Image (cartoon, rainbow, N blue to C red; front, side, top):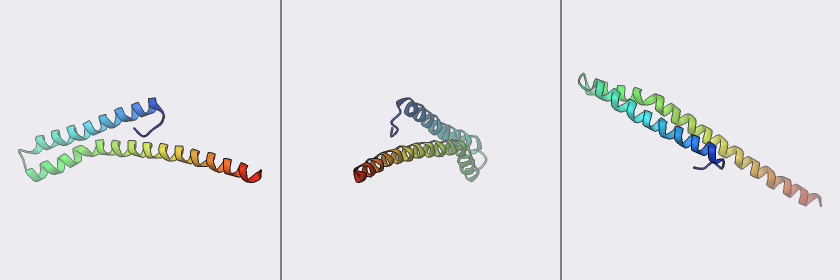
Length: 89
């Protein structure tokens, strides 16, 4: 995982796994429940069944990206402060 905090990294990885499992289970069960009626309806219901899991994956990736951005900005701030100290001396 890309995060530096090990406990947060474990939790986010676990939740990502659960979200992807939710996508697969939602799509397959929705598809199989409507397959007897119509193939087109089964595809649409599989897409709808996968949506909650995909939203969860999207939100978790947003959390990861925000955390990475925050850590990178902290590194840049530290570097800029050190350059400012060198310039003042």
